[in-house]
Length: 274
Image (cartoon, rainbow, N blue to C red; front, side, top):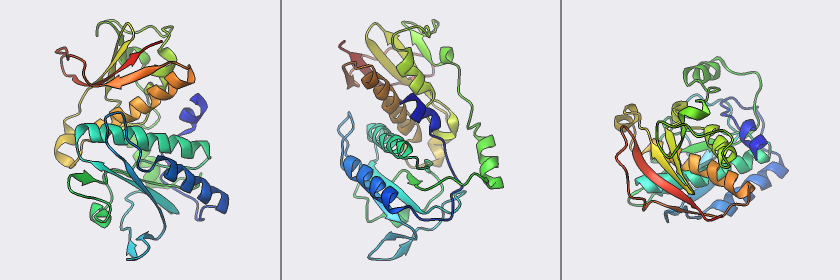
């Protein structure tokens, strides 16, 4: 799984060709497997695969803008309850899908702010939202100038050091990279996030692993959903991949009695049973 996580990157420029029959079936199978699944906090995530150029084959509605995305051959949209833990569940399941597509050697990118959500009204019920979509296709290695600019702007290849994200019992004590959870937490460190902010901070206390959110205020006024809650779900997705790879058993909960931590917001805990 580490290789898959390292291979996954945000691709904004695609080859001008449709998915092969084999890859089309693979994408449909991945979406079918995850569509309607619930995350750890009970929110159902609806997924739908669309082939360009229409988002609805009956109404023939064109997608509109992909922002900085060039030549997307197809895409996937997701829908969930517009609440904090709805977004956590969404991030968890949508990233599971992204990693599965990466295993199929297909390229993707999380898109959260540069498409017209009104085009997806047919997917959304009351209190629901389509927070993100992703193109699915083949990477064009001759990058557009816009893609180069975007990657530089968000410092796409940068990751915070291990010791600034993960802590042992207290926030002034970095977790050792020899800790038995270090591998799973390294998967978290490598996870994608909005503008590559890496807003997660993780406090390990014995076999309880507490995830906190270090918010960036800039997102609170610009979006109608909690994009950094999605980031926390992505982090959880990577952590669970690491635990399962090491055959550890666990449960996920948000019932931990919160400790007042400066500038941090409690999100959830993973409790290890072995």
